[in-house]
Length: 351
Image (cartoon, rainbow, N blue to C red; front, side, top):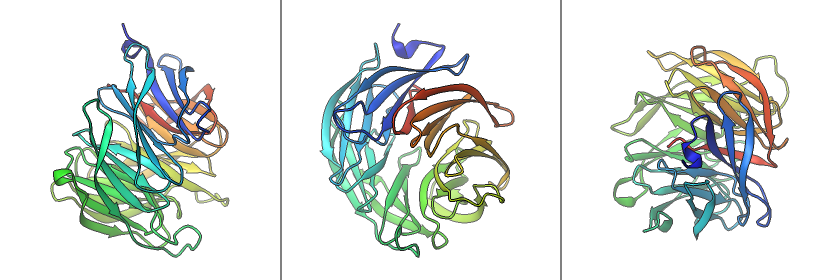
């Protein structure tokens, strides 16, 4: 029996902002009976591993090192205990990488925030990101001078077939679409958002008809019609992520769908909440927003499971578990939390 084989505890890795000599990546466990959380291991040796992802087989973990000369680091996962062994460290080909995604082929796509560069990597014999196969320089500006003075690639998300990637650029107010054929990042199209929206993260609905993007600078979620075969997005509508009576500053961050595609969730940094929307299956539009306090400050990232939601509150340095009602999609606090300094990303091991 390996650690990953335990039925009652879900393992997940946590990325953070940390010095290289400090613990930066954590392996944690969620007790699915009580919502209790614990740290299993922690690992040092990487500066600011702010975004991490585990491959579907749970044999490799990939992490960005968010710094001026960004890095992409690959790790081998020991199935017996979840411990990490570094395999390779490559340049991310840009500044301050903040997001990565995995293609069905295993290739890794990295988004470099400060330089507006999206880069793609093929895997080597050990499953490590071994060499860059393509790089795209995004260009554009927006009306908010101190945030949109140039392109800022915040995420690039591949579809389930590995045909297209959708790159949200906070600085350019655009989602850039790339063709992924033959190891490339070939320009395929783009969608312009309302000026000052600041697109950040993006999800594709499993029905292949809709997509959703969360916008950091104007507190909205954009609903898109989505043609999976053609790689085409068209804006349908926008929904506000914060209550009408909230007057403080807030900056949305992360976005996820429930496994059944019935509900959409977004995090609000400042309002410090997770908002849940019901999805109209016929139109893709959002309704019935419901807000839950995250029990901390600055919810940068979260994960939605069938029965729980896990939230990483960066500024308060805590991870909080919430029970999720599968029928209504609503969240209920478990009273369980875990101290993890500068927690910035949660990557469940679902394999």
